[in-house]
Image 1: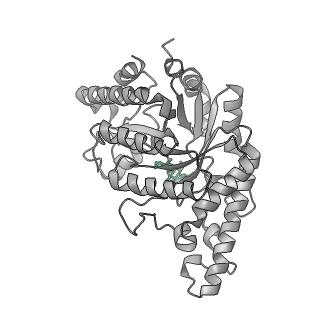
Image 2 (image 1 turned 90 degrees about the vertical axis):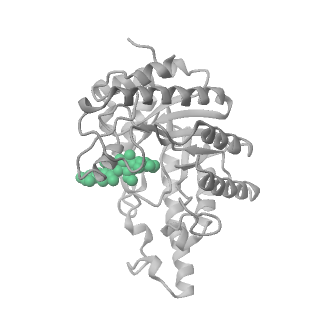
Image 3 (image 1 turned 90 degrees about the horizontal axis):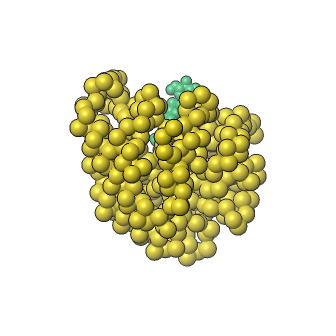
Length: 348
Ligand code: G3I
């Protein structure tokens, strides 16, 4: 039995993995129990999974994950109460079944806003009441910041934003706090939090929310990164910035792609991956975990967005940019669940 990741970092932070319900058994279940002390659902707790139709709830996959965490005494992250993606369409349809964004009448726009916020509150209340005793940290709002600067504050112009402005963010956190209680840890989660412009937009937003008394405890840094990007300094600056606001940091979706952006050309089989690339990835993981360990008082949890290279959303990305063929291999375990050089760097 090899050394355990969770044991190695026990005095520093949690080590987590994102899972689909079917990954809890067999070989992957064993790896989860041995190496991780925290889990999060890759898809099973998103709005489209939990409430595909208004008032019709599907708890099956989510319950399995909660059950697994309970049984194995693991911490649970919840992903995600509010997001612009993987939300069923009904959320954004008015009483007549028309898209809320198309409404031009001022009064009706105001009614739609109330309706949307009510739906959001009902969703949050129902989910939080069901899982509040099991969940340790909640992604309350995911990806509220845009990649560029579409407006002065850099807020993503999602349907949520178009209909409510920033109110959906405020109401989401207030509702989560109301039902989850004072001890729950509430996060705003995003990717590219290392990129200065986006980071600063997030910083300004969170600062303003805190000033207004909106209950927010921390920032989730997704960390979908690459071997050569972003720099360790950028990561460090970002953690420090949010720490200076009195917030916790969590690394929530870590993976280290073998490629730059776009992921092209991609390897088309695991056998084809060059050893130098795997070594570079290992060195990269070493630097990252050195940083995390240096900042351990400011980071409460580090979660990988998967377990082993045989299951990663990055495969879809590699395929998309390489005419349908391409794989990525971003984790510490290979496609056969064998430890990679990166694993030993993280342990040592
Ligand atoms: O469940 C359906 C299935 O019924 C259908 O047959 C199949 C056909 O495409 O699709 C299945 O849904 C897929 C779903 O994953 C479950 O496997 C969706 O197409 C696919 O788009 C979806 O991708 C997920 C993606 O979020 C959606 O945006 C990825 O698995 C998931 O890893 C990814 O996770 C996100 C985080 O939530 C937020 N941060 C970025 C991260 C990576 O994109």
